[in-house]
View 1 (cartoon, rainbow, N blue to C red):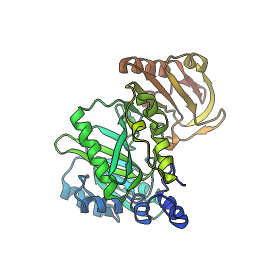
View 2: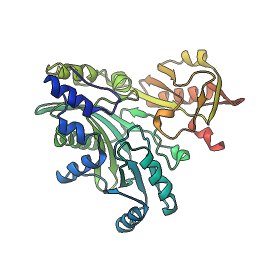
View 3: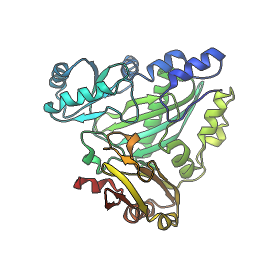
Length: 349
């Protein structure tokens, strides 16, 4: 069988599955789920609620679209990238040219899409689809509070499980992502959804991928928060087996958060406080993405974050206290200065 986690390559999975007659995304599904413009065309055709969008060739065209839409902010992004590469949020027309060029350079095909930016809570979901049966065990609130320091980049700082949304809204989101998966041709497999809750229109699909998520969501947050291991279900489907649906129902309800370390550009010279952090009750993961003496670039996408940690506990407030403790007690030495890794300290840079 064949599957993937965290890599935006369903089009390659589709070719492998097709060649060997294995379960997997179809060629069509692989194509449209790795091209944001084709994906949105399909969703629009099937009346799935999405932000307004257009494929654009240059700044003049974007200015015309922005005037026509008369909205507060735009998102400019490549049609074929992942991990926030090439993505910027734009609030002023003078920012358009640089944002368009940035998106264009980060596109393998040289294609750029513009979208209306919808302000609201953003959700990550993952659904298991098997013919007419579907379930969405993956559901997390994405964290953007205080991340305006990265403007115009859209930078996420992890997520929260369980969601703060009402049961009714959670149900609406789950119904929407499961319907969207089928619209995109995902009939047996996993669908990773990015959703925004518009204050007036309700849940809207930003994007959907025909793969497992990266960033700790499927392999850490959901199992720690609910006891559900849907990676096993994805493996089952890839091997031509029906998932064990009983295993996909929540076994318990704990609070889980993953957060990232952010540092200014420079040489990572030392790290201290690890022994103290390792003693934190509920610490499930502490990982660094750069080695000592390695150069840290200016962070412009998710792949450039410096490290990650995951905290789990019965109580959300306790988890938040431990998150604060980690940020306050782990120190990174960059260019001769000791820094915390908390994104808020980057305001000084």
